[in-house]
Length: 481
Image (cartoon, rainbow, N blue to C red; front, top):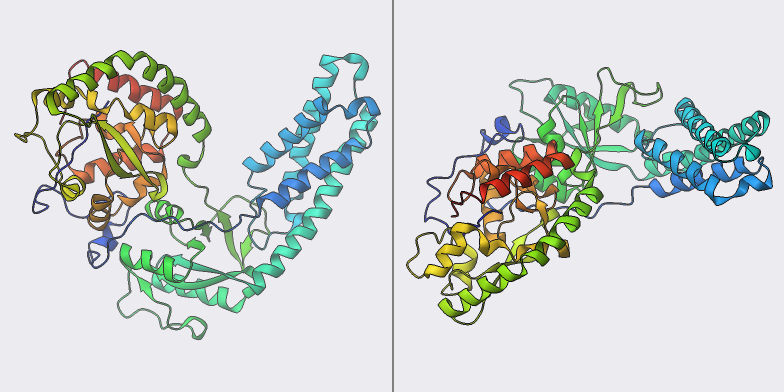
């Protein structure tokens, strides 16, 4: 388990300058953001439109099942087919098509996945009960009906989406060289049927660059993180279109709740997936959105018995704090969790702050003479963190993730370190990759930020297990903070 730092020096002397973690160094170095703090924010996502296409898949399975015998209408057969179709289509991105996609463009992908689902279901039925085996003609009729229904109904749904996109285009920022971005913005302005309305360009201004086209004259060129942040809020930006690869900016826009697209260049996908000749493909979010149910399950499976087994230790620690420092055993403090959500973090009190302002804005209390021997021991052994197992069970935190910080410091660090706000893409944790590398207490915020974002971008359940094992090994030689 990790220890928690709680003090700020009068000047940010040991803190490094703006970070490099998100590939934004060229932007950040040109001008450091000033003015209002760049707080982590996640605007309310608009409806994704996934549900209608999910319903279409379910209707197609039911239509295909009409050609099977009554004995095959058992939910034990149909539910696995529905589940397979939804999983296969969902993983292929067929529930989140580009705005200008047409049903015929998707027909090969839909037909192949439907075939796999029906064949697996038929094989499963034959293996379970040979007397209920589905004949080839019935299976072919069910499959053909499924494909016909899904194509026809999807065509109607997608046609309506194209009409809505033309009538209500989505605000977008274009990322790339200024000249290429202006050309793309002009094409989007001249063809509103694609539902993209560029409101700005993210890139480095060109010296004596090409003149702006009449269709997009006046589009601002954004060169700092703060300008991007302000533009996303003020223009209700919903999409970010990338003409050049920049994983750091992709992560930043996805943190803001924007859909990210790759335009131009060689890409996989149907011929119809384009925006006026620009190849058009959705950039999938990184790992933080996937596997979260399994991560949550691991938290519950480990934290619940750990809290029960640690109960005697918790009682002894509580008694030691009560005898050494008086009433008020638990220390409660507001911290910033996933997507900027605030929660109350629990710890054993090791020091009684003079007031709420000191608690919220002082960076480090290590070596404070007001700390009792009991409090110093709890901090050095990290036993003061044990009550956070309750935060894990409540869902405020995870066992593994970026360490949560107070709102005051989140605001400060988000201004100074470019990738700091993006640490909140995943649940905050009791321990993390930065902590097992010794980054705790008065250590580099930029280094912690880089480790935290690397952990999120390459997350796996096995890595969580490895970090927990390394944390447990570290408790044998505690250092505290």
